[in-house]
Amino acid sequence: MYAFTLEQPTSLADVKRIAGGGAQPLAGGQTLIASMKQRLLRPENLVDLGRVAELRGIKVDGQHLVIGAMTCHQDVADNADVRKHIPGLAALAGGIGDRQVRARGTIGGSVANNDPAACYPSAVLGLGATVVTDRRQIAADDFFQGLYTTALEPGEIITAIRFPIPTKAAYAKFRQPASRFALVGVFVALTGSGARVAITGAGNGVFRHKGLETALGKSFTPEAVQGVAIDASDINGDLHASAAYRAHLVTVQTQAAVRQANG
View (spheres, rainbow, N blue to C red):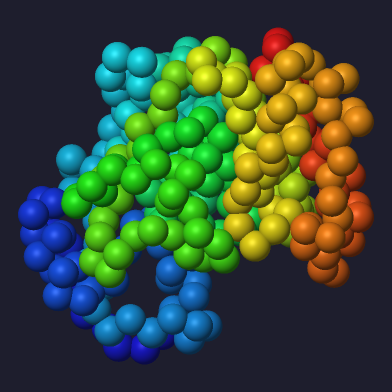
């Protein structure tokens, strides 16, 4: 590891001041620290968000579930309100990585990083959530912009994610056995405005599939998506799985998620 400075403020105001000066925010560190060790990233100044209490916690706010950005995966998985109102989100959090990752990794860090195979972005997009920052509120459909790219501006800090409580929702993923990221993961939700389907692991970033949404909007059943075409030319292929195989998995995991959502 190379030399760098680390500041550990206890208030969001101090975080904004330090990050505004060019410091790299550090959340759970599950991606950033590994990237620094490999010299893929070389920030000279870090601001640790871990001591800022106002960035943690989970609460119900009307018809929304609000999760602080520094809430770790395990706390999301174990929270009674999440289990009651969006059990699919709790299950998703409980299936991320291993115990060590779930104890350190945070929802805000995952969403800000926008790894193309991460699980949380599919829940944020699938539920039509809102990303709350220290400057504004960003709709999920506008937030994710491609490979490791989001609408966040330099120095902008995610403070919370606002999830609308759906009629039903669930997540199913085919796990890459070494990394435990999603080879293909699908989050489905039935909301007041219709069905939403968000897919991770199959492209350069999380994305919605209109064909699957249309089919599930007519009939929220596994059988409804059986005949929906998944264009393999739009899907990634690599040493872990071909594009054609991933396209097949999109259908399989969508059906599995719908079954879970329907109980």
